[in-house]
Image 1 (cartoon, rainbow, N blue to C red):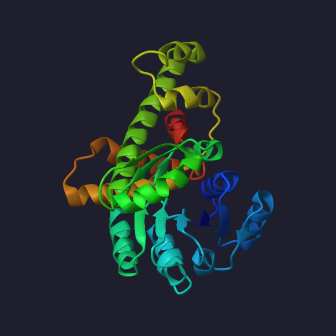
Image 2: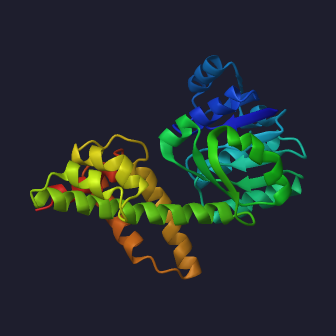
Image 3: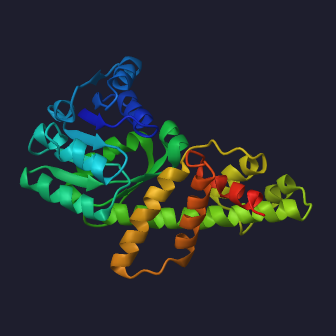
Length: 289
């Protein structure tokens, strides 16, 4: 299938690569053209100078950029995807963004007879590189049925959860879970150290019991070693938490733990840790008086 991929960040670059490996003809766009050229050389694809040009001959256009404003620019801007995409094609947005912007773009795309799916992903950089992301999707059944077999190139789980916006709302649930878990894990590592326990032995045991989680299995050792260079950054989590907390104010959800962890991440940013991974909440505990 002819597809386009807009945005070659730490997630988009390998995701687009998996599409090429699966045999699709992939045309990419990235704001930094040298990165697009490097991708095209590595994966034997092509690259375009604008999102519109990348989308011009694509059956499906994938987007994975930073935030709502970036998304509006690459999709609805003067040289955006919707200036080049053909009627009958499907636009799949993998950006973690607001449910509002998903509905906004869907309305514009629908007027052009373009299908739209909001499809944020979970699994981080490692999940993207290994092709095992979880994809939460909002949209109509026809667009989902058309796009899902292609998305499988980099996903281990894909689920249509409701109308447009449902994917973004599900990603908010995902981030709420992660924030609370990482704070609890940080406190647990800190407590184990303060108690004089061998933290490695403790977590080797408890990760197989009721306390176990992906975060514990994959981050306890790096946290014990004070290593915080693994994937999803604090700056990105705070962007996501803002989306979550804004939505909670609209729907009436009470999120006391998420609000508190958001402030803890603000403390990590103030310590200069904005680019550290989310498990760096531990640093905040270990530098407090």
